[in-house]
Image (cartoon, rainbow, N blue to C red; front, side, top):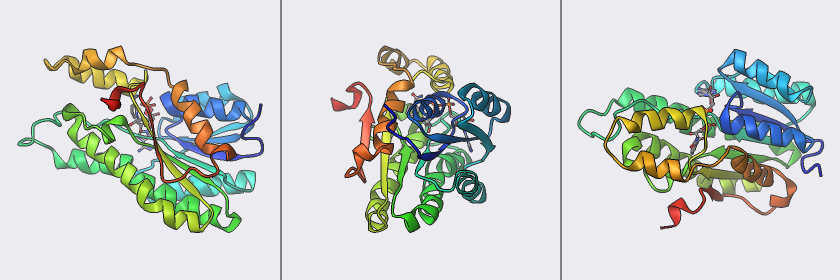
Length: 250
Ligand code: NAD
């Protein structure tokens, strides 16, 4: 069944991993998707692979003007925007667990891509969605935003901030008839996770083994995003949907 028939979506970070799987799921359900990423070659290849309902646009989410341009392209090309999935993210470089040597420029970069970009997305999606009084905005946070990973302290802070952004903007957006939610994935098999595991294997913490035991495929997150994007989630807003196989429960 086509749960997103006639809808238009922008997905950031969709050249890879969770974003790519979600683009696939959205298109299968009848949506037109703009794949926004900074990996041009990969992004074009993914758009070709997903067919005529997908197109690629270069968009560095750390730059507000480029986020605005991605939203505007959706309206220009398809007439309206129904869904923004702010999913692009970075893990940041190590070390993040030694407070004495923290590199705050690394922190600024993490906050720009993982948190500030979510707010920029909300701002510009709301600009085009509010006049129609409909739209669903989804931000990819992380289970690390709920239960900090000490080995990735600054990443955890940036992801907790993205959850705070969703909670703080839900009520103002609701006045315009718009919804905003976060998804907090556990460990998903993507290039980002593999890079994190590579960093962790150099430390003696048991975290790398712990993570490997609970790893899931990107489609598990795509299904959660599909629900939040669809009209089935009409009354769901300001929520953080944790999809981690129960990892953060205990
Ligand atoms: P990924 O590396 O496969 O995909 C991330 C994509 O974001 C890449 O294509 C990358 O080019 C893009 N990107 C990075 N910086 C960007 C920028 N400034 N502008 C535009 N695009 C940019 O990783 P993934 O695991 O699919 O990550 C997607 C999201 O999920 C991220 O926000 C990540 O933090 C989050 N997440 C991942 C996991 C996991 O275990 N993989 C767990 C929790 C949360």
